[in-house]
Length: 470
Image 1 (cartoon, rainbow, N blue to C red):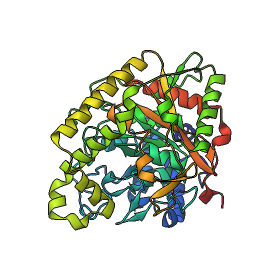
Image 2 (cartoon, one colour):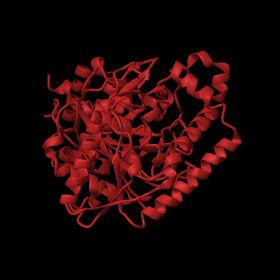
Image 3 (cartoon, rainbow, N blue to C red):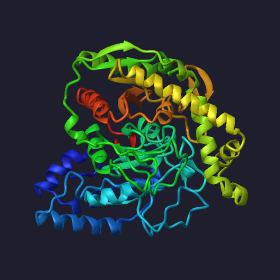
Image 4 (cartoon, rainbow, N blue to C red):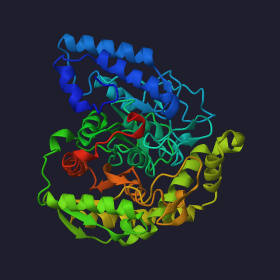
């Protein structure tokens, strides 16, 4: 059934509901895939196989008795990045300091996925404290890209991207503070959705930066991302950043048509981009034009300051969160995270507040633009993944620092909290390239529809990563 094939929530849900396949069979096959590949790819920090089998058997019994809960029922969709809490289960945050930490309560997203009947297989690898873009973790090793195991998976939700791409899960959740859902999704050739800030509760997720953090789906298809978002979205009074706004059946907003949709292109997002990445994304935009979309150039002047504002905000908030441990247990942090946390102690209150003024201006400019266009499209990332352990990468023949460029196109949408989805749009040097589609606040249905139309019109992009072709 499963065994390395591209099997999605939408495909499996129909079979489970009609009792043509059992959740027990699905979980068995996914666990076999994990056993085969995790030693090489290092996607999971912990696999809870016995728990998964029990949950699958319970789901099967419920479905047989006529108590079918919906498309996630009995599906191994809830492979959770190990920064999201399960009550009385170890949650490491990918760190030495929290290696034995056990929270006393479940995260809200865990509760919601449990209510939907999803099956939990274990805890997925991440960059230490979600504070990095490579997933080269000094405490647990690197999560390896299934398209080229010598390359990074991207971070911080690297294990999530790897597991989903390599079919070691049907779907998964990641967190995103500067691009940590979209970076590994792009590098690993899957769909990654950062919802509107406040749409999905962060209660029970260890913070990186309070005002920038998001939780969202990482899946094989756009439709699957819509199903997961339906399950986890909604107001939560336990999360002070949660917004009491209407949710939707996002899967029903996939209309298979984008005729008349206006796409905005901002030149900022095509400056200093790998030439093959740029070609793939521009070809994808042309494809959307052939589907009836209208493309026009837009200008957002404050984008030139967005990377500065994002970095001041994230390093300041992260250092405040970790200040006590930085004082008491400095040597227990990995070198890169320790450096960033120390760096975050430098900005003044003036620096932080000036960054928030940039943020407010950026909000205003995006609101104005979304009165003119429906979505904005960008490359998800300007470059290709470096080899594990390399700090630099070639960008059009010039050697550049990887971290100087990695959140240039993703970070602005953490600052503004706008919804953004990355979808595979082509290949460069046999590595997947992601296209980012951004919409107005709570415009998830709109961006998912554009992504879905593109995805379904390009079945040739559904290629297997190298580890599955051997």
